[in-house]
Each structure stands twice: as structure tokens, then as C-alpha cells.
Amino acid sequence: MSAQTAATATPAAHSEQPLLEVRDFQVELITDAGIVRAVDAVSFSIHRGETVTIIGESGSGKSTTAMGILRLLPEDLAVLSGTVLIDGVDVTADPKAIDKVRGRTLALIPQDPMTALSPVHSIGNQLSEAIRIAGAASKDPGAVRARAIRLLEQVHIPTPDAQLKKYPHQLSGGMLQRVLIAIALASEPQLLVADEPTSALDVTVQAGILDLLLELQEQRGIGILMITHDLGVARLISDRIHVMKDGAFVESGEVQQIVDNPATEYTRKLLAAVPVLGAWDETPADGTALTTTGASHD
Image (cartoon, rainbow, N blue to C red; front, side, top):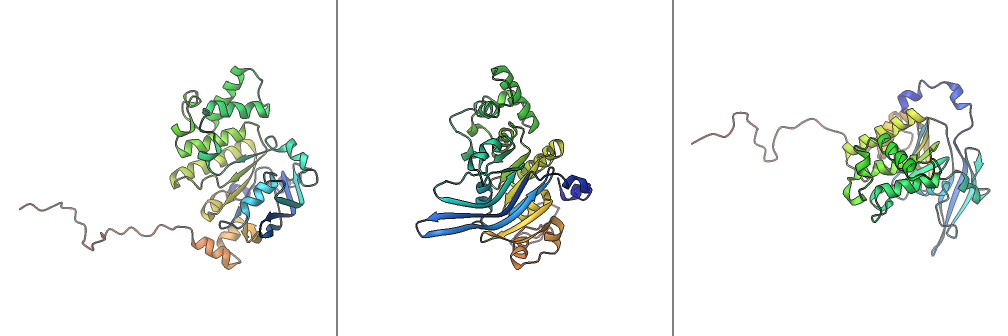
């Protein structure tokens, strides 16, 4: 939920078990230059209906944190430690436990829809495959197709029946991002991990995607882990923010606390990087004043 709706939530809402509880989570990557600690003892939790955002510059470790939680890092190159409880299931103590929750309890919205979707398979084929894997509908092709259409309707894609026949290159970036959200929703997850879901989109389309995520959260009560470098995005969608630098959290708090009273210089620099509209300047670049009378005639 947004920061505004979070303020009206009852205390009882947080008495239940978190959807995601991360304690002292570390990721060490084995490289040619030696072992690199990419994520250093981070801890946070997400309850139903909450949006928690990890924000930081490129290379800060935020996406590595998300991929580590999902156990999508190469097993022979990444060493995980600490505790990650997903709906009570510890996926660090038992690596195979992730198969019980990934694509079921939680789902990933990847960063770039142009590379996340297969260019040689139609939207309908890819969405239908996600539905069959999730087991959220019968194996009957008609039932699978009907569910695919309903999912596209839920993410506000017009004429969904026609869109199923199209290939990724025939859709805009915003439409493709909505398709990825529909694929993630196929398993009816309780938790969504959104890895920079708006970074490849223009500002107008970004706003539509963020509105859609908040709408789905309100309808379904899902939790969202948002990964972004954009504090403007985090401000709009988050309940709590964790600011990450060099693999560790340097500041954590409620969204208004982080935005209005940042405690670190790093966070202040992130805030300063958010574009702000200035006053409208009607003076052209050449310095001549604009007139409303039009061009003069000889």
C-alpha cells in the first residue's frame, strides 16, 4: 500500500507472520579476483499489503539482494548465509525449499521486458505456459486461454484476445511490462519482487505501471519488494525504504522519514538527483521575447 494508506492500517495487521523475513543475509560472490561480499548482513521484513523498497545506485547490491532471496544466483558462484523466511519457509537452510514458494507464494517482475520475454513465442504462448506451470487453471486449453485473457484484463491491456496472438516486438514497452506483471500474477502470489520494473520506461508510462501495482496490491493484499535506483519512484509507492550502499543498508525508515529527514549524505545525494520541475520560462534560447501578435508583414 502507499504511505498514506499505511498510516491508517491497524496494528493487528503486523501481528501476523511476515510474508518475507530476512535476517543477517549475506551474499558472497566468487570471482577471479577473489571473494567479494556483495550483500553484507541486511535485515528487513515485508507484511501483507506492504511495499518495501531497496534503493541505491548501480552496483550497490540491491538487485543481488533480490536475486539471492529468490535463489536465482549461480549456485557455484554465490555463497548465501543468514536467514530468509518466505511465508515461514527458510530457503537458505534448505536450498530446495525455494521450489515450494518461487512461482507460487512469490513471483518476480523482471527488469527489462524486451529481454525477459522470448522474441520467438507469442504473448499467448508465454502467458499460457506460466499458467500451466503455476497450476492455477485446468490443463484444458480453453480454460487456460480464458484465464490468460482475464489476467491481461486485470493489468488493463485492451483487446486481450487480440494481444495473445502478438509477439513482443509488436507491443510497446509499457504493454510488455504489463504482460510481465500478468505472467507474475498467473500463480496468484502473495509477494511480488519487482526489480526496476519502470527503469526502461518513460515517465508517463512509469506512472501507469506504478498505479497498476498499487491497484493490484489493494485488490489482493499482496506484499511488494521494490528494487529501484529512483527515489522518486520509491517515494510514490513505498511504506518503508532501505537505502543501500556498497552492499549494506546505510539508512532505513518510513518513507516520509527518509524523504523529509534523510540521515546520511548518501541519501541526500539520491534525493538531489530526483528531477524537479522549475518555473516556466517563456524566453527563447536566443533571448528574444515571445509575442502574441504573430509575424509582421512588409
